[in-house]
Image 1 (cartoon, rainbow, N blue to C red):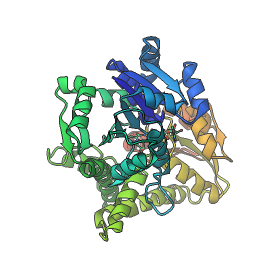
Image 2 (image 1 turned 30 degrees about the vertical axis):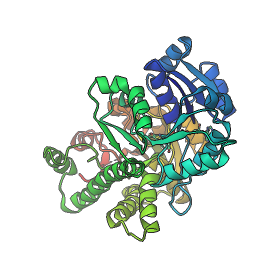
Image 3 (image 1 turned 45 degrees about the horizontal axis):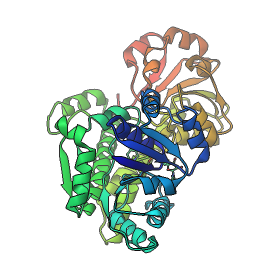
Image 4 (image 1 turned 45 degrees about the vertical axis):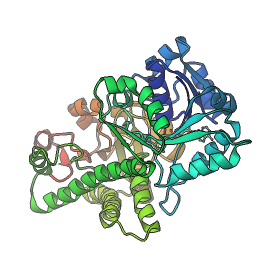
Length: 432
Ligand SMILES: NC(=O)c1ccc[n+]([C@@H]2O[C@H](COP(=O)([O-])OP(=O)(O)OC[C@H]3O[C@@H](n4cnc5c(N)ncnc54)[C@H](O)[C@@H]3O)[C@@H](O)[C@H]2O)c1
């Protein structure tokens, strides 16, 4: 099938490459010319495991192309996916302007029946608005259908998540469009992936409800971790025992400096916002956001009090991306924590295996090092913010010899407290 993917970011590029791998002819479109030029020269603009090989294989097989020419892409495609960004507005609502801009152009260039699929995460009712915008911008009336097909991939494991998803969600009010989507996802049907098919609004809500539930688990365990600290309990054992209950599951029960990233903060805010629009207060959702804000401040407070103030002190930060295995620093806890420490007069040295270039765009006034040992050299403390695997196996004797003071603040609990204390470190973790 000929498909086009409008928006070639984390979701669009991965999804486009994966659909090409299924044997479709995919044109990925973006307004960012630099991004498209890079892709046309074989350079992958984001860090995502396995993506370079997948893209290169499908480009060579002539199944995957990159362009800024939306008109040709629309004209030549039967299915048009929209995967542009839907960031948060200042009031917490979703900014759908990129999506609506694409809808206008898709309407303008539509030449025959198309299925327009919304892959971006959007507020309930957006698919219907996209439909109106397309209709309004068509030169002459042409039949088309709208589908909501939210994406659940996780950065860092996105190819596997796309190829072996827990479920595929399709929202549509047209049987013809549902059949087109089933055909497109046929390889996943063959491996018995569950398909959840409902109306447009249900599919839109499934995405927000899922992300908000996961964020709720994180905020919940973060609160329990605070309680553990007050009572001398160990949050790891609490989480482990809770997770052994099949009704709870152990996933997303890891305490830390609050959730971040390009999805959870904005999606939880957007869910709370759309409820307000229909005069409903989502009390759990609002609490999740409040707990998360407090958690980030608690992380800063933990560092400040453990070091008896940070003014004039040098702090080595390990990990900048919002989670391991991605270069994405959007809404990363590291950014907030570093900014607060700078405000309090600390000097910051930071290292991340892949996110340094992305961090440089949003964080000035700090020193970036080329390896993990660079951040601790002469530092008053090491603060572990993102749990990249290589940080688990650092040479701790070397770390200790490089640090000016043997302080470790482990915001992800990747080190063994007792072992570190035996080695002569002053150590603190989260909820232990
Ligand atoms: N990143 C994730 O892990 C993830 C997971 C699931 C869902 N989502 C959702 O998917 C959507 C996309 O997220 P992302 O992380 O890929 O964003 P992104 O910022 O990485 O990519 C969006 C791309 O769209 C392009 N774009 C903007 N306007 C355009 C236009 N008019 N025409 C063509 N291209 C245009 C941008 O240049 C950018 O390259 C969001 O709604 C997000 O919430 C993201």
